[in-house]
Length: 196
Image (cartoon, rainbow, N blue to C red; front, side):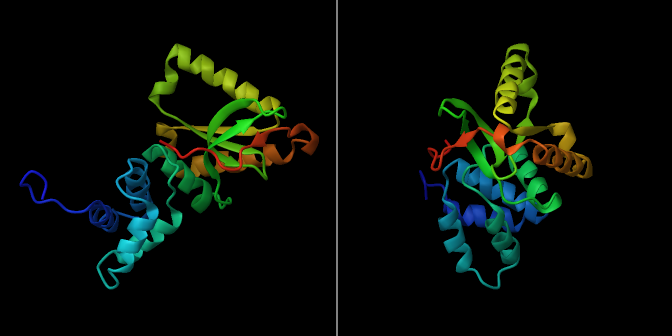
């Protein structure tokens, strides 16, 4: 009870919302966003789900927990990450990870990063289309390419065509593979600060 209003615990609410989601991908989005909002941790949701064996939808919750991250910042970013791993078949990327140049100077925090491939995935929402923001994004992309990273940028409209996004991700990975190793001078931090 909060101020006389019956309420449920956050872990129960997240469990219910993810088990009732239309599919495992949307269940991942539910969990990612609840965790990003600090309503509960992945560990808390996992622990709660473990007590609900046999409940309808519990397998979807378990599957979603295996794909969820505490570092996602938006539903679209989570959906892009799932296209990256489930559709394109690429390894789980680092999420919202800082990238530096060879001297350790911070360049950008990228949405998705496969450091072994030198591949960055970015989701650009409508807020990226303003003149000033777009100009910053172009400079940022140039800086990332100068240290040997290849980028694939996806918009909200793109996410409605998952096959096209998958093809673009795989094409970008092929381009990244052609970048000489000596040109890949980027550095990544081992343990960045938690996402807020």
